[in-house]
Length: 272
Length: 337
Image 1 (tube, each protein chain N blue to C red):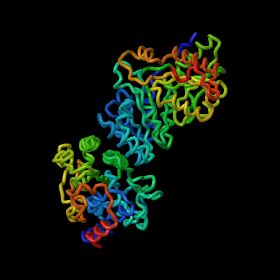
Image 2: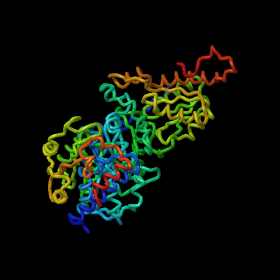
Image 3: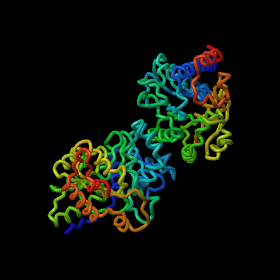
Image 4: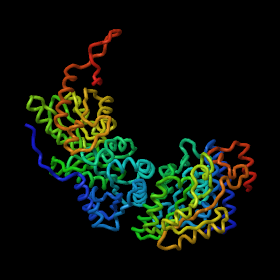
């Protein structure tokens, strides 16, 4: 059963808690981007995506690719709570032998549609899948999430040009536009604005939304299914470290694990 | 007298023809190219099966990623461009979208080596085999003629997993009329007892000519077409080392990281023997006709003959370990050339 917006908000609290606890237990990882993308992932996995955890290779399933693979803690949490594996293994993130690899790895979790972690790859893979779905005449949809910093990779624009030119309308790209990258603010490294305008110029249907307004997120994702003749790009404006005051808008939290004390403080802020 | 071999089609032409046959027999075969389809010969497939042909434009990284996605969804993508553009520009994507998730992508390049001629070093690939063999799980083949290329391409479609096949631009001598060329094997074309010449690609025809020239001088050379660089036919290489005691490895590739390196690695771990390489030195070539370049950069049967004489000299004078505290000062080290 797809969740209501209020239920999705509650689920997002759980996923944020999981991400912080997983990264703390691992001693390394990327909390900032995991928290910024959480509302988008929760809306996808518990409301929008057509999928069945009991039948992960279902031919008619929607395909989701987390191209910004470093955001995998939140993805693992969503998939666990959606029934793909036992949430009890979430604390094994990044540990030897765990299927929860430091970046998504299909060898360990076949339900992942791509192995990612080298930025820029996901959209091209998604295009290949979108073509194959059209050849097979299924109405399944491909969803790819990239980061804004990731859009500095040239491959993203090779792929964007291609998908727009070919009118791949079974493809939705979601940009987790959190405005931070590892070294600094995106605008201080290589500004991406106007990001939506770039996609629009390449024949994409572009929507810009508040990526933390669950109602708007759900509406935009569902709206993209109806668009014909063009792929859709949802530029979701988000906040790095969303939900934890001392992580919000601080590039320091791109790739640093909290201490146990910081973890406790973060969990208290996120709530239950 | 060295033999004359009849000229046949280029291996890239054989690839294009084999693709069309595959397209007819297997609806899952799809092709992606990056605006070089007239040169890679995938254009024939594109005309025959337009729905299954994706010309992505001049964007190799995107092309390889798309191929990975197509394979993920059960298609059998053949992905083509010039060797240097396909492997070098698409390398991250070959890692992330193909090798690492073990996707069933067939990477078939054209214009391998320096024999592309006049276009010069920016288009001449002397590194592709080295780059391809280090990708875990990849099968890597360098066919020597059209019949072999055709068989390897069809075999690639049946094989579950990533494959790299390097084809060439120029027309090449016909060595085979047909036959089977399984992955992990090689083909012995001549037998001999004095040394073994291991070659692939267009150096196989040169190896056969070198065999003839050596024979005129009473030297018998075994000739092995090592069309599959990975997995190497280690059994045939070890046997050749054991039975002939000296090897020349000839390839149209950098002497570092290609067939010569892999054969040497195999022998060092099993049956060491003196080995000489006929390959492109650690340098880029230049513009010129294919034949001029092959001569200038040391890739003809005459160069194989010279390497054979050199390796036979080393075989006749095996290096013995120096006695304790007394270096053999007058003995040149075998690798100081």
